[in-house]
Amino acid sequence: MAALNKKTVDDFNAAGRRVLVRCDFNVPLKDGKITDDTRIVAALPTINKLIGEGAKVILCSHLGKVKNGPNEGESLTPVAERLSEKLGKEVNFVSDYNVTGEAATAAVAAMKPGDVVLLQNTRFRGKEETKPQDAGEGFAKELADLADDYVCDAFGSAHRAHASVAVVTKYIRAKGGTCAVGYLMQKEIKFLGNAVENPVRPFVAILGGAKVADKLNVISNLIEKCDTVIIGGGMAYTFARAKGYEIGTSLVDDTKVDYCKEMIEKAAKLGKNLLLPVDAVITDHFPDPIDDPSIATEVVDIDKIPADKMGMDIGPKTRAIYEDAVKTAKTVVWNGPMGVFENPVLAAGTKAVAAALAATTATTIIGGGDSAAAVNQLGYADKMSHISTGGGASLEFLEGKELPGVYAADDKN
Image (spheres, rainbow, N blue to C red):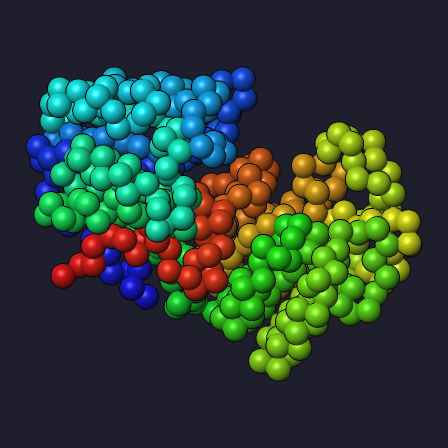
C-alpha cells in the first residue's frame, strides 16, 4: 500500500525551520470547556519531537461544524490553554479569524527555535472545506507562506481534500519544502493498513451503528478481506428485513434491503461467516431522554419482533455468539456500537463486545467515533491495541480508499 511508504517527521531535519503541523484538535466542548482531550494528547509526540529539534512549530486545526465563517463558540482558545499545560510551555495563540492574516505573519516572524504558535480554527476562513477544485487555493498558499515544511498529523481529517490537509502540500513542495506525516498518522496507517492488507488470521470485523448507507463499501470490502464479519446496531434490522423477518418499528433503510441480500449471498459464495443477530432487546419507543434508565425492555428472537416494538440492542444469545467469534480471532476491527449504548439498559451488547475485545490477546483496532467513545466510557481503552482518532477516516481506510491527507505527503526515496 502506497500509504505506508511516506516520509515521516523522522525523515527530515527540522532544526531552525518553520514547520506547519495540521493537527486534529476537533475536541468535544461543553460550555467552553474541553470534555475529552484524547486528540490533543495524541498530537503531543509529533509536537514534542519538533520542539526538541529546535523547529519553529506552527499548529493548525479545525474545530466543530463551522461551515463558512467564524463562530466564537468554536474558537481554539480552550485548545491553546490545554496545549500550553500539556507541553509545559506557552503556546502563542493567534486568535485572528482570518487565520493567516497579519497577526499570524507577525507571530511567526517573532518565533525562536522551539516556540509554538497555534492558528485560529481553519474553518473560520470559509475556504477550508470546499471542493478540491476551489478549495481555497489562496488560503492554502497563505498557510504555506508561513512555513518551510509541512507535517500532516490529523488522521481524523485525512479523508478530506481540504486546504490545510492536502492542497497546502503543493505550495510547500513548490518552494523545496518537505511534506511528511506525523507519528499519529504513522501509527494509524500502520495498524489500519496492516489490518486491511496483511492481517494475522482469523481476522474478524465488527460493524455496528445506525446506518447501512454509511458502511456500504466497508461491508463489501471487509467480507472479501475478513474471515468473519459481525453485524450489530441499527443496521442489523435492514439485514433482518432482507432475510424476510418482521422487524416492527425498528430502524430500517428500505432502499438498502436488496444490498443486504447481496451481501448475505456474497459472504456465502466466498465461504465467509457473516454473523447477524439471532435475538434483540426491544422497547415500545425510543428512550427520551436517550439515557432514561426506566425504559421497559424485553428480549425476543430476531424474527419475532412485534409490529409495534423496535429493536434497540442485540440480545443475550447474540452476545454469546459474538463473544465466541472474538475469542478465536487474531485481528479484530470494530466500528460502531451494537445498540443504543448511551442508555444503561440498552448498552449490554456494546459492553459485551468491548469486554470480549479487552479479554483477547488479538490485535484489537477500534475505528474511532462511537466505538472509541464506548470503549473509553466503559474503561477498556487501555486494553485495546489501537483506538483510531478518526471515525470517517478509518472507515474510508477500511474501504480501501486512498486518503488525501496521506496521499499528499512525500514518498520516501
